[in-house]
Length: 142
Image (cartoon, rainbow, N blue to C red; front, top):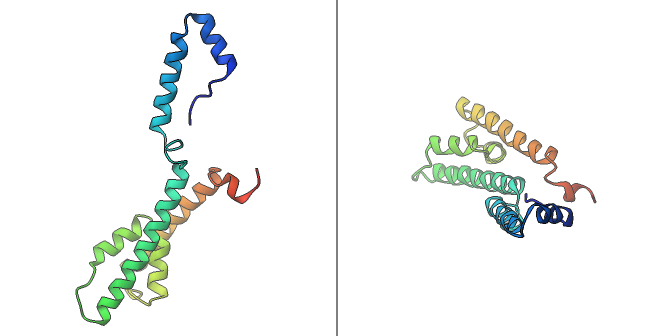
């Protein structure tokens, strides 16, 4: 997200005074470029959000798998608070698969509720990504 520097803009700036206006414009443009994610590595906010959702869901599933393994072996367990925290921080899909694929924590009501809320949060974020036009070049050849 930056200001386009075209010939019309340059002509307007030159007519206002010296070329220092152009210099100031370029400084403002460079500040705007530095403060957005678009120019850092080609990632926008939607791409960062998508990567975050994917990583949090993967990590949540892995946490459920580790906790299930620890429960079987009677070893140190991952706290329920940690599992619920990751579920509510966007890991709803990972928690859902962790619960029903691994058959872990399926009887506890608080995990069912946390999984449902986390799933809603995750789906809402994915809907935002799709409808915000963030995946514009992926789903169509525009």
